[in-house]
Picture 1 (cartoon, rainbow, N blue to C red):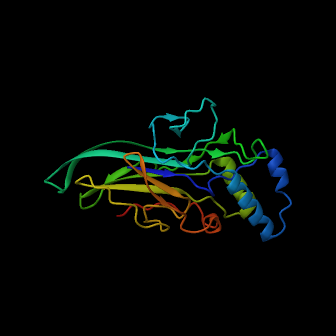
Picture 2: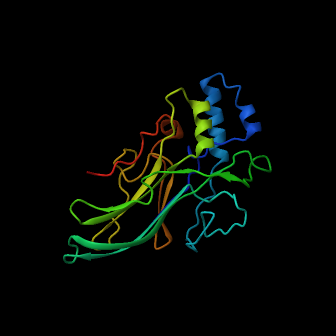
Length: 240
């Protein structure tokens, strides 16, 4: 089971270089701010995900797209792959032992001020990985197993977010996906989006693969403005 986050517009993509920073100093109205936000989000978007993940190796975090450039943009914001086997008390019973093979990888942020009029991104900046990233746990009733991938903009993008959208209390929210398997190996689906107890964050777009074949695409729960207005307190809360 793979959750492949690939925003067409992404609040995890805010970054400009010195030239770009000089450009956004003249922001006087909310319309100006919205324009710059939309410009940065659109220019830092990832490529559309493939119908099939033809490889599962990571080259600078790029899945199925080997790229020799050391700081090349990844083709996703976040990648959550889960594969596990269980010992249970009976068919579909309580999990008594598990072993998991998977990965939870944070992609980077493509530079919006790229080549060819900004349409070709050749460099990117790293993101910040959440302390919860790649954590997994068995549910309280021992009937399911979950794994989380969680990250957000790195320090440069957070500074741009603060400058563009903020005040002294502004911080950058997290994105996440939580993939869950039942004790009989059934994928339980990704139902619920937006709340901190839901398996998917409010933003960005989530692309779901089963056995590396595209299975489902889940669009953002809301537009980027709602996500940008959140803070670092917006992160997944594990059920108690």
